Amino acid sequence: MTARPNILLITSDQQHFDTLGFANPLIQTPSLDRLAREGAHFTRAYCPNPLCSPTRASIITGLYPSAHGCWTLGTKLMENVPTLGQTLGGAGYQTSLVGKVHLQPLAATAEFSSIECQPILRDLEFWRKFTGPWYGFERVETARMHADESHAGQHYAIWMEEKGLRNWADYFYSVDGTPGPRALKPLPGYGWREPGAWPLPAEFHYSTWTAERTIAHMQAAKESGRPFLLWSSFHDPHPPYAVPEPWASIYDPARMPIGRYVEGEFAHMPPPYAMTRDPKANWAQFQEPGGHGVHGYHCHLIDEGLLRRSMAVYYGMISFMDQQIGRILKALDDLGMTENTLVVFTTDHGHYLGQHGLIAKGPFHYEDGVKLPFLVRWPGQVAAATTCGAMQSLVDLMPTFLQAAGVAVPRSMQGVSQLDVWQGKSAAARDHVLVENRHQPTKVHLRTYINERYKLTVYRQQPWGEFFDLRDDPQELHNRWDDPHYATKKAEVMQRFLQAEMQREIMSMPRIAGA
Image (tube, rainbow, N blue to C red; front, top):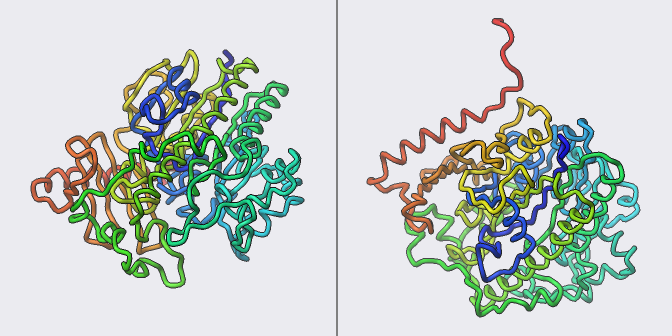
């Protein structure tokens, strides 16, 4: 083994932590099961924000959203923020990213640019010329959409055309919102499509593309003789719930273990929770003047049959993605690179499929939305077939990867290296995780502190909050924020929360003089 391992980060998008076959017999994930069998499964991994852009930016910066600046959807990570790819690239690594990026908004202004917006997304001549560097990655191949969304284009569309699918636009919604002739039809009243089979052939699906191009970048690194950092960023199982056959039909909706609202569980929760069950709720009160709506702040009532069909397709999307991940793992074997490659599989945040009556992400910090699947494999360095409850955060990935590569970790990192934990040399690198959520500048701004047993959430400028005992109430049905029996413990955890907030302040340099 050389001193510098290859680093392969494989991520899904919006995947519930309980969708790994070795832990959940209702779903088939043989490739992810292989990673768990040959590496470690971490059961207490969390995102720093339950939304795509902020967490993805944290992965490549080692910073929380409040520090790196991409604090919610519709904002961007500025290009001048130091990144993982930039740091490892400077150390001689080949750095590549394939798949979903989502670090810029679907709009641009004179002050804030974006290439992940229309009409650029479908300007294939632009993307033929643009392959990087971008956010520190030497080579980028990307696509923005999920299923048949109108954001389709970029390098993925170029690949489809090269593969012979010249009419690829027929399978997607157009820029003006009109469904193409082979796109899924909208489902009235729910704002999404009827879950089911997408006519797009599997060989042209973006999961196939992500795997194929990931393999190509590994082959290029092999030929160059350089170690690689490669982020293989899959789009699924993020809604819309759509996948080609046979994957759309391999799970029986009647057998899907959908989550449920427990009568009365919102009685002591902040007001927005009860509002999710009110079709006439006034959500406008949470919108900033001239601002945008809040993801998840809408009615979550849904027909049970539709939810079961959605979950069945969601499982199918994961199984298809797993098949493609299997291709990547086999390619590592065939290239003789498995032994010297550190592989991490995780997702950007969780998902709701009826748990607590919820069906979409948003300012909800239940375990379903913030806890993640998390697997690590590094032959000879990470013990095989192990399960570990040490707390992990995605903000820790950059410092951990840098230490694994033998590169100094910058003082600006807010994450902590987990390498000794992964290698079994230390029981834990942290005793808590922090989850931010600033969906609007002031009206929807909350933060959560989670330790081994307790979870505490504070809302900006609001009297309400959340306090859960995860040991005695693992389903998070009893908010103890106002419970006098928990007042002393809540105060103790609040003090730990304040200490954690102070602890993560960035110290860019040490003090080197008295004045």
